[in-house]
Image (cartoon, rainbow, N blue to C red):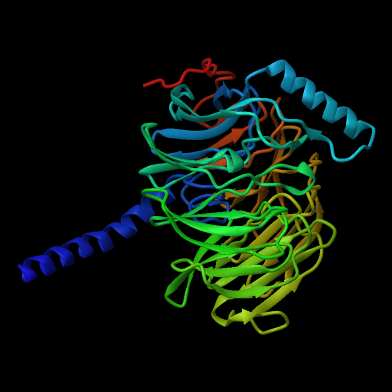
Length: 465
């Protein structure tokens, strides 16, 4: 009997090991999470168009109910989007208008006061953008405000091709099957964000471990959950950490996986299995937002509000406090991003200054400047993070304008484009198309079609299957 058990175990292990590269290959052809299949903003198998407009290279354009900054994620035939829809649209609009008036008067902060929201999870068809199913995760009045340009649905979902994880922060974390059935939900409490700016950190997923970072003005922590059940695996306190909006990054180093979390106090690496701290370093600025990227054993941390810093951390050397040690491969202290995350392509790391229109590219190995202080033509404010496909950089601005750059070692503009609606959410790139969530719509930018406007999103229903 023992031999049978051992044989069965070895068979299952062999199948599992065989499936890992298969799953990785499938993920590469999707956009399963914030920042794409490799967590770096790169779509390795896509070749989207360079030019578009409201009447050119738009395969479909569908209206998205409510408001949200969550990026779309894609698996197979479905696009998944999170949004928050006000129960009283007029009351929400009045709250937004009041915040806008405060901003115009230079009163701070321009916060949108809470009104009751339906927190929605949407599955849309990749064929035409039509609604496949819709679920209401929760209906409630948020406990605090959000910044005028933000929303109560700012964290992006993540999927492993079997489950979809929808993070609404203080309004709950929900796990669904890809057919829309709720598997489990977890309430991690209420987050108190700096100046009522709102929440935004997305969950990170590795295998069956789901990571949520909870940095706020209260007792900050990081927690690991079993993705199959929602059961808490470990929780580690993060003393003295204040609000941040960065999404954790899971990377492998020295045969074990660790979770990297940038923060205003100290950026840290934690053991994925136990939650034990491996290393830490100071240096990030206040309001840390950009998500780290990783290449060849080096993690790149950055922030750019009330200061500028990028740190290249050599994980093989990172143990304990790494301030002023050889574990810091190089640093860069100019033009780093406040809101958009950097993009890492081949041996180059590129980023936007603050959320303005100044662009910089560095050699990721050495920190050498390839080019910097390049003004993006026709672009002003940029909240969406850059993406790369087919050797091209795509950058979308808040007013709907965009610029396409050559992703090589020299600055070269390939095209500029315009959509009629503003863009704050970062795009997804998959299947030779760019999926752009604007303030009101989802655009599928593709050379396969030039339909100015496709089917409108239907009115709220609990499920459409």
